Length: 65
Image (cartoon, rainbow, N blue to C red; front, side, top):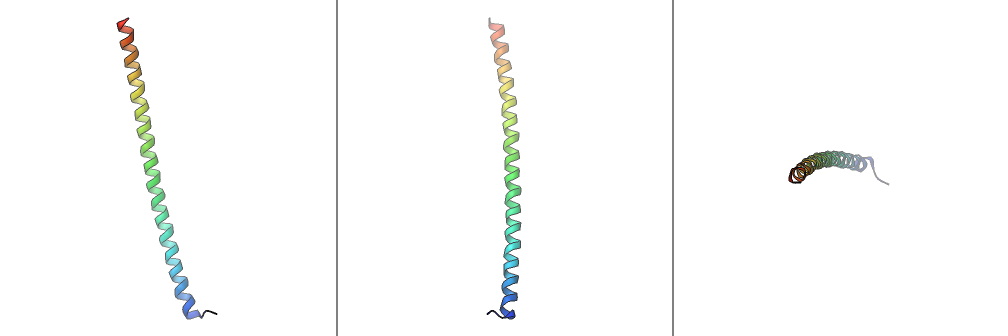
């Protein structure tokens, strides 16, 4: 069976690994959310530009008829 002298350093090491893992996962999740938000904003901008182009096209078609 493990002695207390061995168990305490192993438990401390496991705790450090757990804290580092949680911190890393949180940072990854934050970056993922930033990317999703940026992509969503770019999609909205694209849709806005497409509506503007459709309106311009309709306007040009109306004047050429």
